Length: 178
Image (cartoon, rainbow, N blue to C red; front, side, top):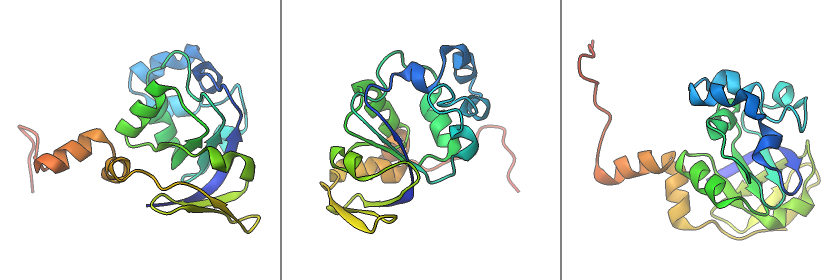
């Protein structure tokens, strides 16, 4: 699994209230992730939602996602097309829930000092090298655990479990097929 995208870099201790104000929490609880995504990081970087592109990567400092776990945050990041969040460290709840929902939240502390916002980064999750394509530099990293990769490649814990159990999507009761 290779991640390649433009970097958005944020510092340490990015509390959940920094990337989404609680005043928008009702949108997440209602499942309105498209609307919710228009408010992601508006207090930390007002230009973010207008400039973010599908495939972009967040590179973050330590303790990302601490604080109240607001409904819908992970879905909102996925709606924006964020490919992964790579950081020095995450709150346990954020890391677990992101991975379970298919959004890679991966601890790669070695990347933080080697990238800046706007630079292009390529990371092979199976390998031990990342590349800052903007600078033309290579960064030594650790390989991602095979079990974690399987979860991410499946699209999260539900899809992974369904695949392992041999469950295929079936039409819902009352659904008409052509």
